[in-house]
Every structure is written in structure tokens, then in C-alpha cells.
Amino acid sequence: MEGSTDRTDAIYSIGAVARMLGVPPQTLRAWEDRYQQIVPARSSGGQRLYSRDQVDQLSFIRNQIEQGLQPADAHRLLAQHHNEATSIPVEQHPNARTSAAAATTVLLAERDPYAAEFAEYFLRTEGYVVRIVLDSAAAAEILRNEPPSVLVVDLLIAGGAGLELCRAARDNGSVPVLALSAVNSRDQALAAGAEAFLVKPLDPLQLVSTVRDLIGTSAYLRQRS
View 1 (cartoon, rainbow, N blue to C red):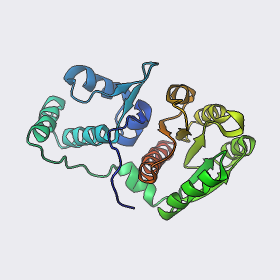
View 2 (view 1 turned 45 degrees about the vertical axis):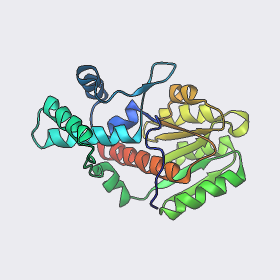
View 3 (view 1 turned 180 degrees about the vertical axis):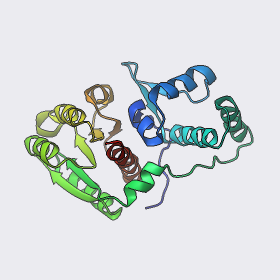
View 4 (view 1 turned 30 degrees about the vertical axis):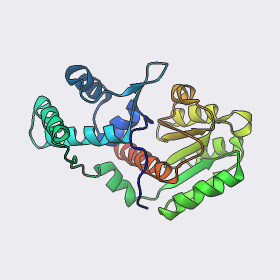
């Protein structure tokens, strides 16, 4: 699926970005403090939140360092691309490439069956296996017994049990979480363990690209295990 979406939305936690890129969170914080070039947004709780554009910029930095540049030189090269208004060459990160060949299951915990069908259509179009549950207890059981590649959860499922599902996935340790809500519950979701947050109504392209990124983090966790 091709198209454009708002790549400047701050939706990814620092933990998600670290796994997407294979770069420790402390390194990302050090680059931010030292070079002040890629500065994430902050939630009201002080958590760092990155946009897709910033993930691409960090991927460029990482690739340049892997090719032998010092971090300062890599950041200068990134600034040069911005000053010259040229596009940043970004390769798909290896974790995402690995996950494409792996069996990927999306657990979609939704309170609204129509919204579930909408999201399922676009995710299945990308080739993902989607399991829909409309009950938080059933979702919790799947998390315990058949952990998916990623959990997509409406925070208002079962009257607000979505946060507890975020905590359950965090305790599992290998299931990244994309939290959804019609109200801005981003801070609560991140505090409960979600790695990305989107406000409803969803943009289909943003939903798919965010899930794709988080599935990449899931593949990385499986490799580390």
C-alpha cells in the first residue's frame, strides 16, 4: 500500500525507536543532548516521542556511523541534506526486512466491530494475519498463551480495560503495543507500556506503517531471545 500520511506526528516511544534501529536508548538521548538536531516531542509526563520523519533521520545517522563516520560527522551530513533540501537516503531497517519473512500476527482488541473490520481490511491487505477480539479477557488470554507479533488495542475496550492490556503486553516482554483511542490518552497509554499511540479516526496508511514498524521491533526481540 502506497500513499502519504503525516510523518511528523509524534507517535513512537524511545523504546520502540531503539528497537527499530538497534540503537540503545541511552545513545539516542546522548545524540539529542549533544547535537540538538533530532529533538523528540515530550509528553506531559516527560516521555520522548518520535515522528516517522525523525526515525528516518536517526536511521540515516546510524547507517553513516556503521559506514565509519563519527557521530558528529554523521549529524553534520544530515544537516547538509536539510540545508540543500535533498531527500535523506534511508534504507529499510534490517529488523523490518527480517519480519517480512516471518509469520506475523496482529491481535486487534477493539470495542467497535465496525472499526475492527475497517482496520482488519487494511492490515490483511498488507499480508498480516489479524485476530479480532471484542473482549478484553479474551485478548488477555491470547497474550498469555499465543503472543502475537503486535497488539493493537482500543483503550476503551470493555469500558476502559485497554490500559490493563497494555500492561499485560509489557509484562510479556516481547509484544509491542499500538494503543488507539478517540480521546487523547497518549500519556496514560505510554505509562502503561504502549510503544506508539494513534488518535481515532484512523488514517489507514498511518495505521499500516505504524504496525509495520512495531512488527519490526517484535522481530528484533525474537532475534535477541
